[in-house]
Amino acid sequence: MLTVSVKHNIADVRKTLDNIAQKQMPFAIAKALTQTAKVVAGVESRALPRELDKPTPFTMRAFGTKPATKQRQIASVFIKPDQWKYLRYQVDGGERRPTKRAVVIPQGLRVNQYGNMPKAAIRKLLSKPGVFSGTVNGVPGIYQRKGRSVALLVKYVDKAGYKRRFAFGDIGQQAIAAEFWAIFARALAGALATAR
Image 1 (cartoon, one colour):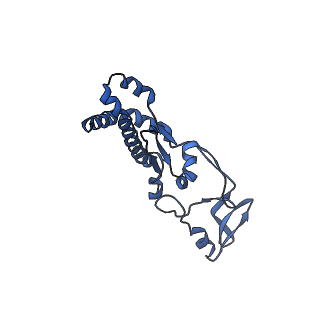
Image 2: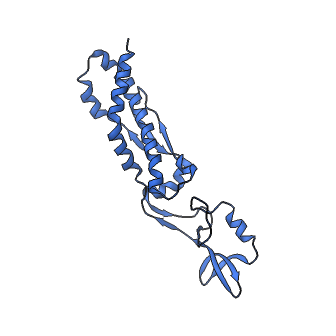
Image 3: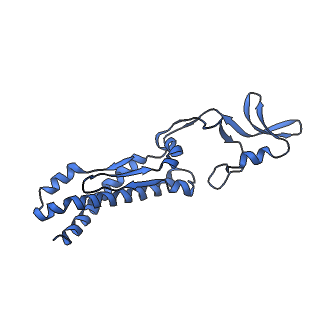
């Protein structure tokens, strides 16, 4: 989770304002933080196709925001739980263990437009004549018999290693630095225009 909070800078701004403007500050800050979080979520989403190979539409909807309020002056940008299950390895790197028996790695098989095996692919493969699941020469996987030889279609591994590829925090912090103060200035101007 990435939090948007600029309290130490806001304190300096507050000193330069009159009483009416100071009363409007909590509302303006909350609005600016919330709007900034939404902008950051958009920046993160646009960065995905640049950093990752063909993210799916589901992955492109990974980012959510939690708004700030006048009482809680922190907004958040986060990766939704279902997408975090797999994006965590792109954000933090590390080692993925299988949720079932093994991690499946296609070996020259056709994959979908996003580079993934369709969900029903394993079942369809195993229903074909001459295709079986087993271990050949110490390598577990799904094989297809071709005459006297066999071809590896899918390799089973007990873990998969990932390097950090998507700099979620860095991308977000850069967007906050670039966007917040302009958004805050507009929010404060709007709050002052409606002040009574």
